[in-house]
Image (cartoon, rainbow, N blue to C red):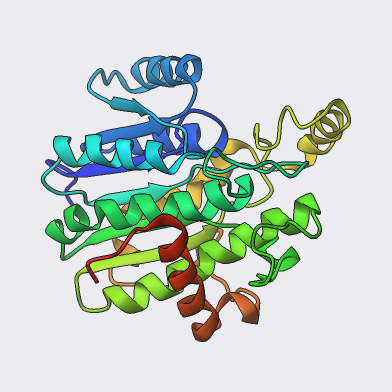
Length: 285
């Protein structure tokens, strides 16, 4: 597959797995548009790409996916810059040790990790359809979904907040979203797959408290590097071997079966309806 004259969009691109994914994708001969929240880390990422690949043409946009208006603004800027998008990698994510709400009044982990994916993908979908027949959407999920089945009576986790469960629920949402979107995209030439990057030493959750930061520093020696964690994202985004595979869940470049509640078609369709209500985003498929 030639990457000449193709466009890749990557979110959460300025730290951890996202930064490693950006460096890997920058080695392809394609246009690369990155999205990051922090100005300083954005500049550092661009500098690292220039140093390691020699590329000076990588574009970066700033946006805070805790805000739906910011997701829409970023999507608008990408739409203005592109006629077709060949790969969208949804990687931006957080884990919050304490319940936090966004400016839209939504629980932050669910809002950023799921609704951010949902809105951005829906707004960019016309450009992905324009890039068919081998356009790809890659959603970074996690085996942490095994800690959290969705509770539709408390999606905002107002009754009880347990950080790992809430994070797991957002990752379950990523997989259910992938399944329902794959069903809707069948036959369009656009595919969507999700992945588990592994237990990776990243900044995810940093700043949630001194005890959490200390614990993460201790266990990080047993974790994958960000480069290892980015490998399956890069594989799903670029390898010809996965062309045409749709609605699957991968780990270490191999298909893996998620928990049954993450593959339930009725739950996927219900989550889709709720996501439309919460974001106002309507898909063209």
